[in-house]
Length: 235
Ligand SMILES: [Zn+2]
Image (cartoon, rainbow, N blue to C red; front, side, top):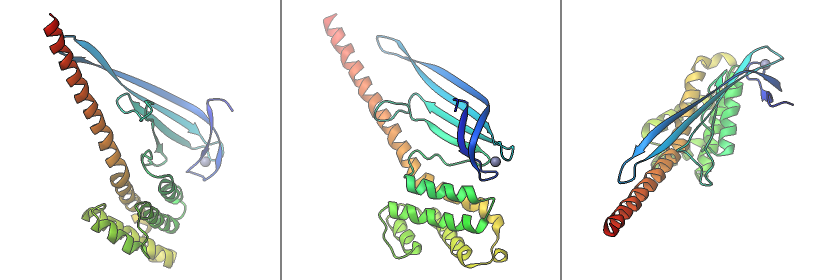
């Protein structure tokens, strides 16, 4: 297998197969910031984006992936955090801060969405169950677990309403025949799920990272000011 080939599950035909990369593009953007004080020095921040296009040899359809990183977003070990996204045939959520089990359950819903709407709705309900359990809920059913998350403030009212719609739809899908539930709602249901997962997992982590960064910046500035004072005394 060369670097230009990769085993990917094709979400058009469902086959997991070796796909050739048929196109790619990398974009690097550097921005110079000047930091003032007695010693002016430049500071460069870099944003990297890469797009990779793969062709499925079975159904002759393409898959587009995007990898991006930002020099100001680094992990605790100093390595850049790489955000991977599937852009086509559907857009995935940013998985970085979503627990593996929850992310896999949601991915299962996405994969099946064009093939079977009922199973997709059931998979969405399962995703919510995984999320509740991950948040420490051990209630008898999804209704009670969501209610508890809402009471604890983990789910604000509007997200709790969204989750209730997903739960009810999932229940209906589990017990209904093809004709009885409206499958054209599936895109909205997936969107709701994405919003809930983003709110519960991704946003708090991103806020943490930015606050860490701000804390570090303040620390650096204090350090610099102290040095300037010392320099002044020595002068
Ligand atoms: Zn395919």
